[in-house]
Image 1 (tube, rainbow, N blue to C red):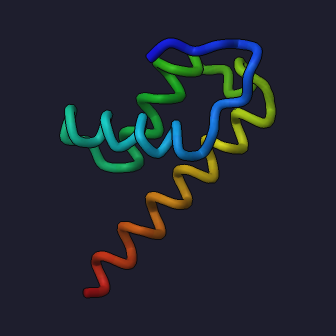
Image 2: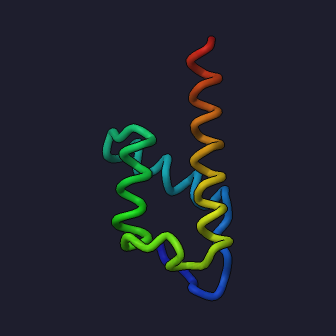
Image 3: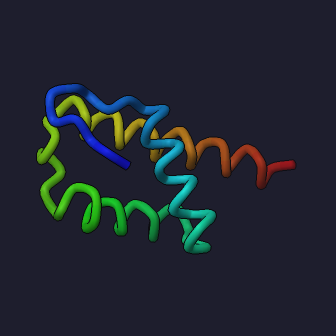
Length: 73
């Protein structure tokens, strides 16, 4: 995925990105997060700015919440 350094990436962007990683690599959410930090952010969570980092964290929480709700049923 191409990233424009001038804009804030959204929660929805990261949800799609994380789900793609999880599905294509058969990763758990934790593994997808670790992969993203290493590969996408190059180990620097502020690489694309604080707002983008916060959107990434919101995406992780959103996916985690969805996964927990699915497990309840």
